[in-house]
Length: 106
Image (cartoon, rainbow, N blue to C red; front, side):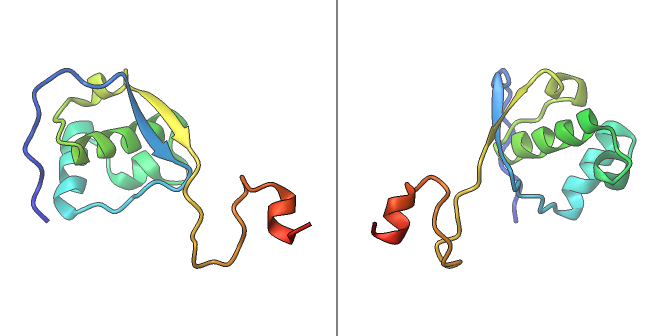
């Protein structure tokens, strides 16, 4: 997959991350993240990683996908808006936002 063209404008004040973020990375994205931070993906996102670094890595990845090319320190100032993931319509489970009566027909 081709990398999007880099945008040189100001970064957004926030970025949306779902409760199940898309953590697919290309090898080039992994190399770029390591070059930017000096740390491996495991060090940034693994079990023993700092929560702030883990969150910042998700923001870095999302902004890269949107075409931004900013440094690690700059990205640390972008706020995160958490949103729940959309339910999978194929799972057969009702949406958590549906009123109970809508599930049962009562």
